[in-house]
Image (spheres, rainbow, N blue to C red):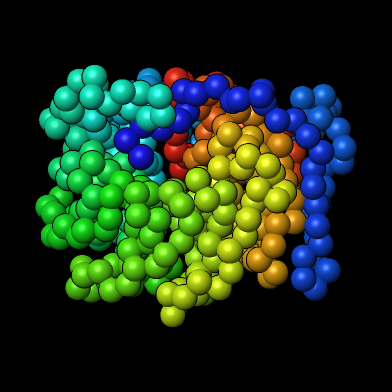
Amino acid sequence: MRGTWHGLSLGGGMMVGVLVVAACAGGEKKPAAGAESTAAAPPAAQPASTPSAVVYVSDERGNKVTVVDVAHDSVVKTIDAGQRPRGVRLTPDGKTLVVAVSGSPIGGPGVDESKLPPPDRSKDGIALVDLSTDSVRRLQGGHDPENFDITPDGKFLYVSNEDAGTATALDLSDGKSVAVVKVGSEPEGVKVTPDGKEVWVTSEGRGTVTVIDVATNKAIATIKVGKRPRSAIFAPDGSKAYVPAEVGGDVTIVDVKTHKVLKTLDLTKTTPGAKPMGSAISPDGKFVYITTGRGATVEVIATASDSVVATIPDPKRPWGIAVTADGQRIYTANGPSNDIAIIDAATNRVIKTVPAGDSPWGVAISR
């Protein structure tokens, strides 16, 4: 969407509640935190993580990327990647940080967009940050790049162009556009299937996912999902996709091979007021994590049963989310509180928050 909602206050205050746990099929159960408030919980021992792991958090209003060392959960530096950074990922080889930057003004609910300044298209682009030097070069990625994904072989990058209603395919060998595909109004979420054969792009305005064939760069399917879908995540084996919809309050589960909807989970049943947004999956594929925005939680879905098995109270309006390679920690970007939350995946508790600029948006973690 043109404007994120990160700058809004949470109506009714921040949710701090009891962790809700339900058994999944086959008796598998996601560990619970107990009944204590996350704010009152005693300091927890932090699980070991890869010492070299680094978290990159895009700071939409602060116009930078905040870099956090996982070993100490502290900010080590910031990177100036360009204006209004949102989508953020690492190339498969881990050597380059890729950031979607935009010259479009921030709008959103309650903003009269007719009074906003015109977009500065010279600021639109895809920033490539060489992590050995922090030097930045920028590619043209269409109007108002919001989010993107990279094919597993690192050869192509697909960008959602929010203002244009298109997805742009870039050849990373020379930085040139090889295709522009119509995907519906206000595209946002972009995800490449694990086998690299398809790209799924969500349309907030149309409530659909457009499936693009990477071999031909043609749209081959349109899947109807919930209202205002914001992201998509795939099971590691590529069998299923999970698409959270902010206005619909639900997650649509789709058979990737057939492009048919298998199930729809209403997250408002476990978290009233849930606005499903960001999505991530554990490395072993057992759990999908969905941020609920103003619902102030992370919902945990067991992929064996495709049911909610835990609800993690999180700080104000979590959106972007990522999981460490060892699966032990989950990081969420929390725009209104200008921080990231660090969640222990074994206990489903927020164990720490770290300041991360002015309106954190997306999260990427090195492997």
